[in-house]
Length: 341
Image (cartoon, rainbow, N blue to C red):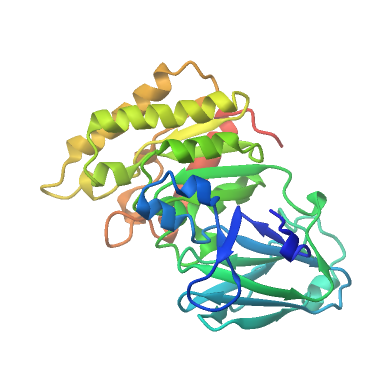
């Protein structure tokens, strides 16, 4: 999205900018508008004020231009600068004190003879990737740059809703979560609406996703948070059905894949409630099979990875698990949906 205050850059996966509470000046990057957050549970409202999957994007007007971006964060964090799809060697550190970072196109990228095989993005597009935690603010942009054009970006977008797993909570870096893997495999851009610990299939979020017309395919991973936070199976059924139907009905020509619970501790730990996990998966299967919307499909999350892909908490996938999930979901979407190419 573009904001008049920062007209020379594009703020990807950012719907609103608000005041910071850790420093003077600067604009906090939020994934949903305040009006949407008001309808979410308190934890989800706060999570959507964090920049999971958010990027600051620009293209220098001339190859030799230096662009200065001033950022701050509520706590120490790292930012990673990609040029197109080309990964940086080292991240930059930011914290509560605003810090200005300078960006110039790397010399060898200036000498590329062809962009064939260079990935989803034009190599001259600078992409500053932000971590899911903590909150981040943009303070200033200086230098001769412009937002990327449509021809410099992937032509289609993949939207993902889910829990901390969708956010990529334990992935080693933001570009290693399953959402990014799916987008990369499809050649799409990504919109990440993961909601750590608080993905409760709320109407406000369903209405917001349904209202957006800037995505082409979506996945809804529903929802280990509800299984672990005391929701009854009946409550899950009612909320998940309404959530799914709202989105599918608003976009009948767009593929929407519903993902059952990924493998986690309830399946394998003595004394855990494996039956409850099974019931939640069965309910989501039933919702999809009974829906009148032909754009809905089901992905069996438990088939996407084995337990060796989990981290030691036996809930969140590690890097290997994220990659396996991404491969599986991308394969499902390619095989079962009429995806734009």
